[in-house]
Length: 379
Image (cartoon, rainbow, N blue to C red; front, top):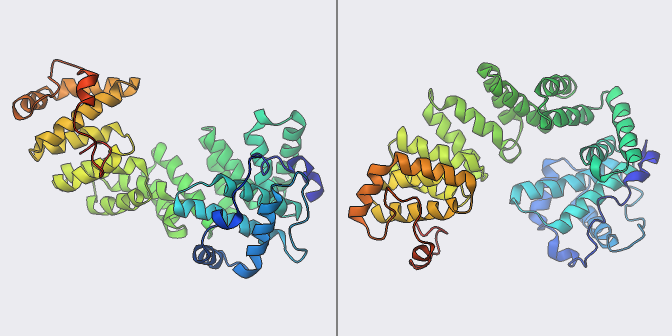
């Protein structure tokens, strides 16, 4: 099948033509790479792989692709090299465009060595970006996918389900995901699949099945791969088991999952009545411009009688709403529903928005004290 891969050669890896920094400046540290190689049970050690990483990276500057993969390497070895870089992105939550290009080049090399997972991944890339590819390329990618699907290639079945899921065809996605689990049921990929099945059942809602799938997803996968499973499972437990919900939500928050901050804040404020802790969660959400977290922060500040914090929060909300139509509507509803609290601020602080005014003068905002180092909203 690898002889049909010419359409992929150079499509992704050479997308950037600007001068690249030296390899040693962009490659992850040895300790992290060694740990990931161990987790993936790589047959080749860091000392064998590092020179190949460097050779492939340096070849990206060449207009003509040269031979950079040793003849002793298998397609699976090269794919593991690609997956290491992928996991580095997930673990560090950073994206380096040069390493992303290196990832794509390694994926192409793995496909050329006949690795079916790599062939499938590349074919789906063409399909998902059909508008950027020629009709002939798209047709050929579909042919490769069909061939792999007919031999029940697990990743092809999963990617078919993923494509249906992203297109909101949840019935088809569920069917393909279940077919995948018949082929592969105790792997990281199975953990990702059960997480998606959990979301599908959560939407139905079939909450018992959703819980079962989310628990299985968490059992099979490390946190960074299935953070949504932690988040949705915490929602299931929010009313019945708030302590368990808080633990799961904190795990999601540790991965920077935006939606978790507001729910943790409201859980601490409304169930555990710990307004100080709630305030900290809301502050984290505000850094991600979550408007609900601004509302929670304001309410917490009023309850704690921290009126200056409430005033500054109100001003920040007003700044956001002046540049965003959705935030503007939310801010108006907020003003209407918090008239008494805002009126209270008039007596407790100076230069504050009145309940009857939607906006204050922009110059007044600019003339306030400078933002503190700890928080962009000076709260």
